[in-house]
Image 1 (cartoon, rainbow, N blue to C red):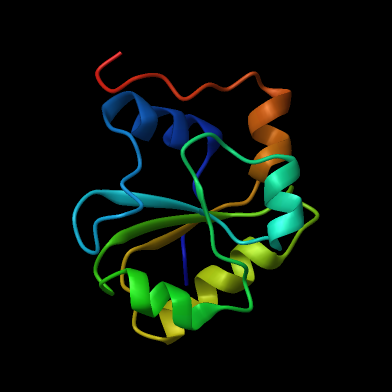
Image 2: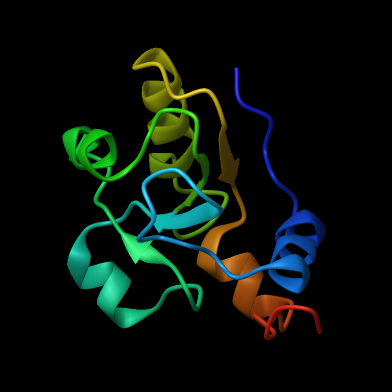
Length: 117
C-alpha cells in the first residue's frame, strides 16, 4: 500500500531538490499520469507525463527503486492512486501518490522553487 504525499511534503521535496525525470535511478521523478491532452493544459512544473495506461513506459524509464511521485488532476481523480498501486504490484518499491493533484497545487498557490531556496 502506498502512503499518500501531502502538499506540504511535496513542497518540501521541491525546496530540497528538483525532480530528475531523466536519470533512471538517481533523485526523484514527478509524473503526471493523465492523458497527454490534460497534461498539456495544466501540470505541476517540473513534471513528466506518462499516461496511466502506459505502465511499460515507467519500467523503461526508471529503475524499480527510484523514488516516484505520481499525480493526476484532483482528489476526485483515481488515476494517481491506481497507478501507484499498479506500479507497486510490478515491483516498484518507492512510489507515492500526491492525491490532491494539479488542483490542490494551484489552489494553494504552491510553487516549485529553485533547489536550496
